[in-house]
Image (cartoon, rainbow, N blue to C red; front, side):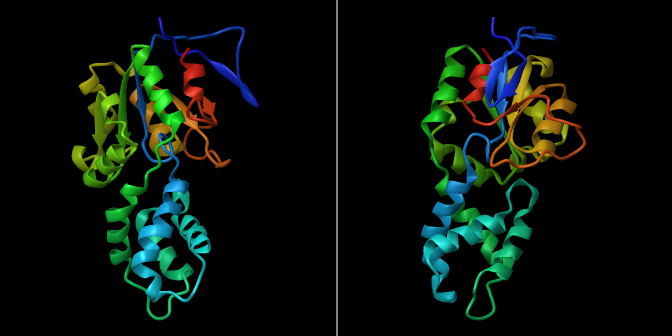
Length: 247
């Protein structure tokens, strides 16, 4: 039987000698952005292809790699909204004149960024292995339906997924319990029989735990823990570490 085992972290994840409160797991639910795939390589691809193609004539000369650095910084990771990121682009880039309005920049982002998601062998192997172990898999993600579905198809992971809950389709966003329950109802799995994996301490980990699920925090780029929970229930540093915890 597959179990959600408790692990300690000392550089790599090491198995504890004792396990408490181990429960059988029937499903693993994932966040999409910065969990199943790393957004920073995708942002850099977006910057050096689509953004450079469509906006370089409005900018003072700058190397594409520097442009990518600026757009990554403007994005701000999980704590900055899309509108805030677009305002940051207006401030940070060396525009020749008045920059495009933030709505125009946002529309461009939503049109082309979903095409830039990077498939990785780690992602594919993690999903394939979990499916081979007999687990149901789902994605629960905030965002527009068209863009998030495009990312899923660009990554090529739809065949692995038994449920997809996108806030733009469901009508409610993480961390509200309803969007998690939406996916669980499709899976026909109770919250206590599922685990959620995500990178955002509030949207993902707090949202999942208040729904009744167990949760694993994927910490990327040494980002700090924050939010209403004093500490993450479980912490990993690579997506494939999920396979070690769910052993």
